[in-house]
Image (cartoon, rainbow, N blue to C red):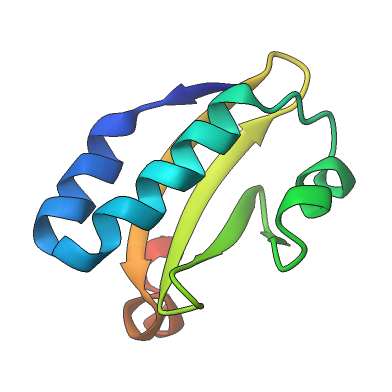
Length: 95
């Protein structure tokens, strides 16, 4: 997958220092992945869920949520948000 953009992962890692390593692992896995469907994603991340046009990943033991839009046809993954679980639950990211 072509991950666009790693900058949001780095920014989240700077804001939450304990998050940098798990996001880096996620990035390296996603970058090498050849996902063609949500089912492919779930082979690596069984808890990944589709919410509207986005795919939501649990990061760091479900303490954080990574929200991405995946275009399976082009192989591009757009990182939309990295949020704490509490911020995700408030739902402001859906706007």
